[in-house]
Length: 69
Image 1: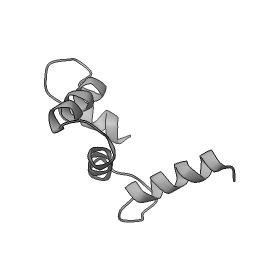
Image 2: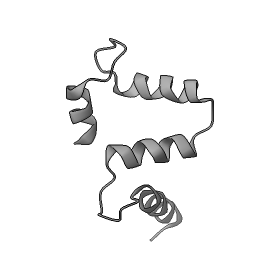
Image 3: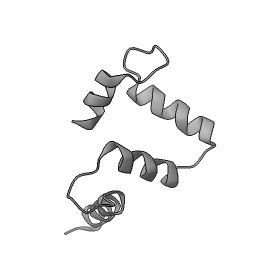
């Protein structure tokens, strides 16, 4: 295993809090907020830029379903 792969695996394991082999949306959100720089507002803006597919200012159920897959 090379260094990059080792780091990626370590990050994945850190996000997978319940150790089920999957990172669910809650684990991702907590990990993301804890590991990124910037204010809470900047983090939320970034999250919405990524996941508010229709750009309506809300992340609805269909967008959550897409994120969770």
